[in-house]
Amino acid sequence: MKTNGHQIDMNETVISIRNLYKSFGQKHVLQGIDLDLHKGENVVVLGRSGTGKSVLIKIIIGLLKPDAGTVNVLGEEVDQLKDAALRALRLKVGFSFQSSALYDSMTVGENLAFPLKRNQRDMTKDQIRKTIDIVLEAIGLPETINQMPSELSGGQKKRIGIGRTLILRPEIMLYDEPTAGLDPITSMELNKLIIAVQERFNTSSIIITHDLTCAKEVGDRVAVMDEGKFIRQGSFEEVFNEKEGLIKSFYDYNFIQ
Image (cartoon, rainbow, N blue to C red; front, top):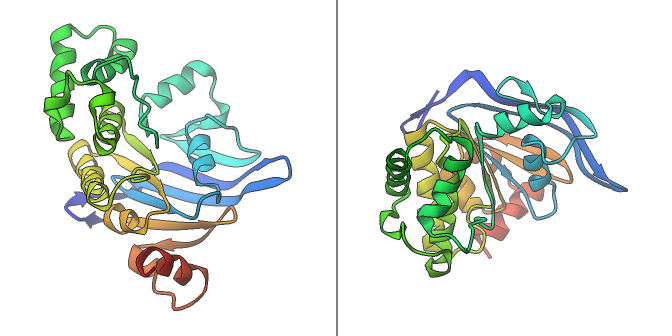
């Protein structure tokens, strides 16, 4: 399957989720989730705030354990992994936080160097610098290498956060509300970056959002979540061809009001 200039291998599943449940006390957050992510694919998980999107992504990377069901990432059952194996898997799965999660006391270059120094200790200073330069060029911010996070705009911080995730060349990217808090122009630029990352670094991605413009621009497939379940999956056009009901009201809220 080829979409927007990139190749999707429908025969290779990099994330497989089956019958996933998660509750916190009496609050039932996930209630029987099934989802596949194929190699080279961008899947958008779309829903209103509080529907369980961020809980899902935390279970995928082992920050939370499910109550029931299975989560298989790159052939590994995540909740069965011991600490060392889980750390090894996480190096293959990049998590782009909503807040960008940059260290305020470090320059942009130092922020990007940190995961390399921590996880690839055999790299020389020249190799680290070259890797940083490649990533900064890929995200369109080579001039920021010596700047502090406090000197960056919100959009730049988001880009650097994505860059720091990319620095270890993960096979899978997980984006948590990538356009949250950004103006429309900056959001469009970030959407283009997500697509560019997919094409240049051959990543497979899950994008958590409630932003329909983001979903339409970056998603090869969209899965709409409501009350802990997926109520519709397909291309953006397939999902939003409904003339009434929850799907239609969600579309109208984003694009009409």
